[in-house]
Structure formats: structure tokens, C-alpha cells
Image 1 (cartoon, one colour):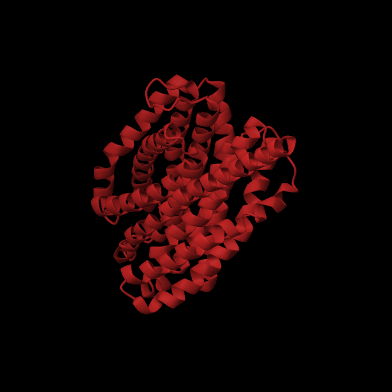
Image 2 (spheres, rainbow, N blue to C red; image 1 turned 90 degrees about the vertical axis):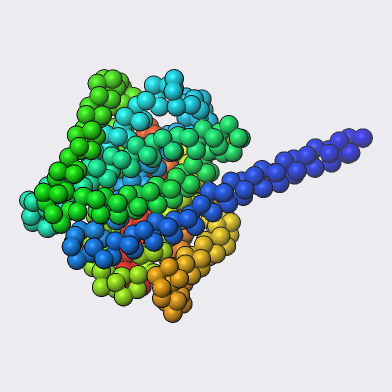
Length: 402
């Protein structure tokens, strides 16, 4: 009788572990499968190629847009999903907690600040004050509209996942990083076409209304939350990571600018690039976001030997990564109209995915563990740092292999 009871308990335990494994694989698959649509972001970016001669900083801006926006959304997603799981954020837009209001305010503020810094970098890079002013108008409009879209849609995705008993840690950032990349790339194309930044007067007159709206909106929200200790701490923890991502993405933008002739000859490189950056970064985000939730609820120990267990997850990710990289290469070749480039793109992006995985898995655990150990909120730092590193790593590898 005892032996039968013990056997039954063992079977229940095994069944539970199997169900947990299947659920985990389902959530990871849901999250990473969304990256395939990132090819649309690359295709939208490739439509900017005809404007490269008229606006010399377009290629420089693309990594800034993808990486910095990804870092901002990563911080927001991390805090949102952890807040939903531990009950400090409610799954609704209206009548939410102070933490949610603070997060929204910080995201919009950071968007305006980042666009200003990006414009300064472009001004220094071009050594032209007029180009700085034009870039400032264009980028503030771009980053603010993108931030508003990101905050609303990310929140809705997180609320939907939480209410449907899908782990928000596994799906929110991977899905939204892709959606944000597509929207950001299309928005960049739209703003370039509408504002015509090669015409200083046109860019200033057409872009000024949105710039004023963005500044006034941020100032209005700051009046409500600027004295909040949570607001001060969130800014203090998030913004260093955002600056870090801004610096790294500037290097990535510089490297991408050096590939202008190569990209014009092989546009499939640019078509596949955002999706590949997304995929590698999303794996790290899934690991980091899951770890931060477990750290908050106390189900994981702060030990660096846990890094070894992360490598055990490598087989779980490599097969979908190989399939996605192959798909990116194929569609990059098709959408660019250069089918003969498929073997070239496939070899390059398979190498990028393998090297990226070997780096990002242990790095994601290390960053989350270190930040939590020293009393910092890992959600504010881990995903932005990981996003910046993986995006730069991807561009470096593409630069070396292209």
C-alpha cells in the first residue's frame, strides 16, 4: 500500500514536471515565433535605401531606434510583467497603481531625452548645427510617437496574457520587441517621407507641432509624479542602462553606416537584420525576465554556479533559432529581389545566432543576479543592458561577415 502510494506520488510529480516543461516550451515558442514578423521591420528599413544619399544619418539612426527603443520597452516590459505577477500592477489601463503611472511617465520622458541625445550625437557626427536641429525635430517626433504606441500596446498584451494564464515574462517583451521594431521602422520611413529632412524649412514647420505636444505631455505628467520616490528611483536605475544602450547603439550605427555600399549591393542584409537582432535579444529577455520574477518571489538562489544550468537550455533554443535564421535569410533574399544571396545570408545569420546564444545565455543570468544582489531592480537594468549588447553583437558579426 505504501509502495503504491509512493509510486503514485512519483507519477504525479513526473506528470507535473512534464506539464510544466510543455507549458514553458509553449510560452517560449509563442514569444520567439513573433520574431519572424520582424522581417517586416527589415523590409521597411530597406525601403529607406533610396533616401541614403539625401539623409546621410539614416543608417546611423536605425540601430539607435531599434536598440534604444528596445531597451526602453525592455525596462517597461520587465517591470510590467513582474508587477502583474506579484500584484503591484493591475491588469487594466485605467485606475491602475502608482507604479504603473510612474512607469508610463518615465517611458515618455526617456523617449524625449533619448531623441535629444541621439540628435546631439548626429550633430557632432556631422559637425553641422542645421543638421542637428533637423535631426532633433525628426527624432523627437519619432521617439515620442513610438513611445506612446509602445506603452499602450505593451500594456494591453501584458494584461491579455496575464488574464489568459499565459506567463507574461515569456511573451510580452518578445512579442512587443518585434511589434515595436516593425512600427518604429515604418514610422521612421513615414516621418522621413512626410517631414523631408533634406529640406530644413519643411522639416521644421511640419515637425514642430508634434514636438510641442510631446514636450507639453511629458511636463504635464512630471507635475504629478516628479516628487514620487518610486519615480526618482526608477529614473535613477533605468536611465544609466538607457545611456549604456545609447552608447552601444551609436557604435552599431557607425558600423552600419560603414556598410552602406555593401547594403546597397546586398539589401537582404538590412531586411533580415532587425529580425535577427530581435531573436537573439528576446532569448536573453526571456531568461532575464523569468529570473527576476523568481528572484522577487524567492524561488532561485543568488549563486553564480547557476550559470552552468543556463547552458542546459541551449538545445531548447538552438533548433528554433536555426529555423528562424534560415527563414530570415530566405525572405531577406526574396524581399530584396536577389535570390542568389540566400546562401550568403544563411551562412552569415546562422553564425550570428550561434555566437549570440553562447554569449547571451550566461550574460542574462549574470546581469540579473548582480543587479538583484546589490539592491537594484533587475527589471530596470537587465533587459536594457542585454538588448544593447545583443544588438551591438549582431551588428559587429554582420560587419565582420558581410
